[in-house]
Image (cartoon, rainbow, N blue to C red; front, top):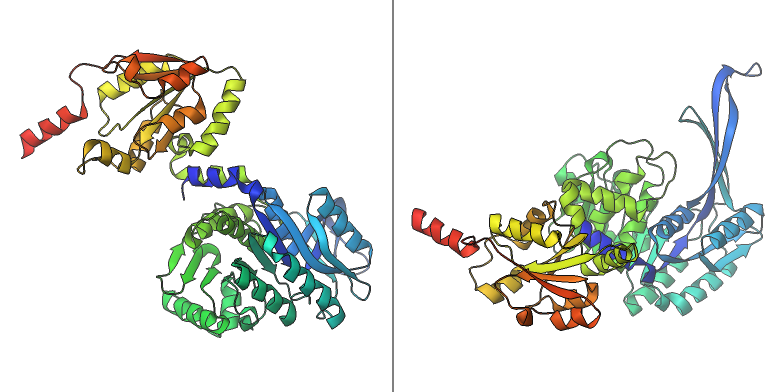
Length: 488
């Protein structure tokens, strides 16, 4: 998955509205050191040096969505206790809508306390309710979801088997979601995945998939058998099985499986990684990505999350930087227009002079490089508008380009004289010029100033056109002719 797609996704993520339904809990961490054994019993004594309280369960899914920049509403049932108040206060600080959090005096809000010494978890203490919601508490949850589901671009179910996601609640969610065309993504628990029937996608890990299918997953064949059985039982269109060090496998009805290798660099803690997968998958789907691309986004995020200790979130910058590792500097220069427009506006505010030029640059040669170096010398930043493959074919014929748009973009981005590359599909770069408003519009010396597309636009706000001379005898056409002459 390329960096520019991810950057565009996160530039619009504030418009994504997510509903999270599930079991809320608090994760308490007591960090300390241990250097002695208790005289009272043969156990370690932990000297606590730091305490931390985090959102856990469905709350960690919410936290991940907020960290990614999405708008979030949470629907659940908590107790009328101090832990419940702490949850509500935390959500309010994060601007999370809590209108659909209902309080039941008969329930205990879940709190899990982990004692950690020398980066090792010593013990975990759980205080919680696990019984299913009463019929009296199911009714307001189901009514609220039925009335408000249409406001959301995606619904996430985070099931920890603590009683909130009862069969009645799940059925209410799926029914209204199907009617309104809203994707429902589920992090499931237990062995009966049929209870999620009608959901868009489930995200079990390998162990959960084995338990639900009754098939030990040892190779690709057993993996596909388990996936097929789960999809049939739950009536799924998609199933994403997370496989730890083996990455992820996406199964979609009627399509070949997509196996995505892991991107984790070093694993410290897998707790909460499933929540990161669910959250990042949801923003991908809600942004219009295909399921396979959304799964690749989730895979990148999961690889970052497991490199952190404890339930942790992942930021857009971390995901963007991780996605850029494949192509390093060249990939970081290639932008979609929406992202680039914001970058250029910020650079202008810092007083930078922006130069823009455009072209096909098929079979890059010395003439191109000299031209681009001269153009860069006209200002502080050079933005190159690059014709897409479809645009090149319309301009130069069906046999062109010889080099694909992705390859051309990376070759050009590797040049020091180019600061940013942006592809365009139109016959002219007028849309780019209008959006970016460069100070200088550079074009080759074989043009006249009057013939440069965008001249009127640039001059209208005080910019100017500069004609840059080419190196004589250097052209892609000449290279093609020499190749044909020597090798035909």
